[in-house]
Length: 193
Image (cartoon, rainbow, N blue to C red; front, side, top):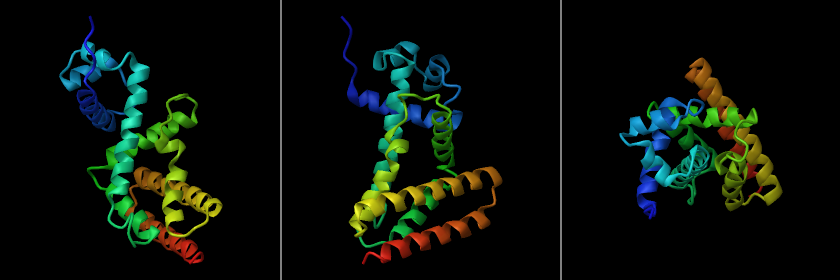
């Protein structure tokens, strides 16, 4: 009789897998090298995940959960900080040397999803991120339809700036543009007060 997978152990394993993928990338994911890196057997992985597809889905969901929890923990998210300030805090966290591997992983996921190679595996991190940020805008008084439009524009610009930083390394130029994006978002939000 097979043992039931321990949900706490599975969550712990998923965190380790997310960290592994941040360092190694998603496109070359294979169960055996992953298990070896984790110091486990492939049987341990298949005990928690029926196959590579389930592991991939669960890993993306965990990445999304971690990212959203961090965003919600930002100072000012539920307080009085401006949306532009929160965007800047997010940038500072995501573009730190410790967190750039995770940013690269998210962009790899975006590229694979855009190429149609992640059908059924696109995490809420990508599919619902405009709605997620629109929720913050609505809390600041922006009407629903406008919040979604502003969020879509801000997310797209932010992603483009992050890709620019990752590809060119020109932090000074990119961060000047980011500061302008933050100011624009704050101006847009202010029009609804």
